[in-house]
Image 1 (cartoon, chains in turn green, cyan):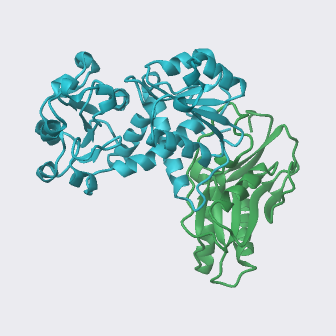
Image 2 (cartoon, helix red, strand yellow; image 1 turned 180 degrees about the horizontal axis):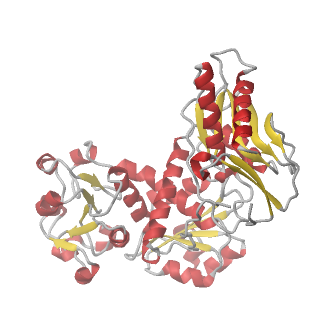
Image 3 (cartoon, helix red, strand yellow; image 1 turned 45 degrees about the vertical axis):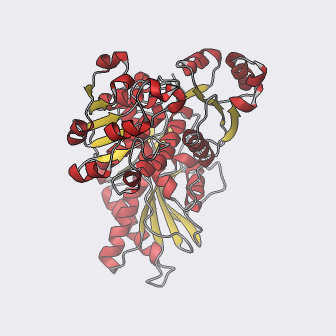
Length: 176
Length: 317
């Protein structure tokens, strides 16, 4: 996916997010560390630019809730979690870059519950690459990309990677 | 393919025996991660499931309120299974040696041991007896690393960069493990340290610690950014009158009093607890806005969570 494709998708997400809600009862957007935060922020700013609405925005790190934290070689570095509003009875939209096994989403739901009891949680991902290991699905999907498990899907964002793009890479560490 | 540049630093410690064994990067990393745990403690549900498959034994051969509670709470907040052991109510009374005790406990499949013991070096000894991760919660007059880490974290909340900051440690330097860990840690992070106290409570090796030595309280208070008062440890000193004439006189000469706070408006007062009011610090000082003693306690919880987290995760190579 190129920058133009992605911009279109960001725009679509912005409208889809608000579609079911009557303003000002807008949903809150929570981006998941690391790429999900930037994707969420992008959608957030489109909503503001076009509609003048500023939904609540939070950042979530799920490291503590992962089920594979001990099986990895490296101790995962904990990043910031910042949810500056009350989750109680809110409609939450979680944003992440890639939906794969579904384990990250599961931990994210666990994590959110420790901040309060939201009315609903929806999930938005830029790329759904299949290979689910848990009964999880996305409510909003940028693109469905069937992949092999030895491939890697990389979503790039300008803020971190100097470009907006999505790559599917064969094997780990291969050239694009 | 432009990966995010992998940081070359990797936290790769198995134990926390003392800050002596931790590099400057290790210490900075622990303090950085502690911030996240401070945030966890502010949550409506301050509980995370990270250690739910971990069993920890708290092996306390010496009395403790704060450290023990703090460790236990940290462990429970992270979902670990916790067993507590205190020497006074155990088979130690029947004459079981430390080595046999730890071997027996370890046969019950324990992942981590938090140990406090009156003999310096006990945690090192335990690493040779069992496979588990050992965390030193104070060994004699040797080290008390988590206390030093929480002190450094507390100072960092006021002075984010410790480089060049001046920390005065006042009181019983020779019997204190807190002071030793603090000197090692603070110096690794580039802070300047001065110790101050009666001559009888200065260790013979004080010149080898690489710190300023002063016998004048006013002098160090005028100099420092942070003043850390140490508890006069009556249980270690034995008969008080051997080392100084009276607690009253100690307070006169080395107790931090209200008029010091007025005269030197910049420094903040720390104390590892438990406070002897009217000895190390005047009662009114303890209740004034110039102390960070209760922050130290909260930070202690966060630091211990960070240590438990970092020592339990990943597969070491």
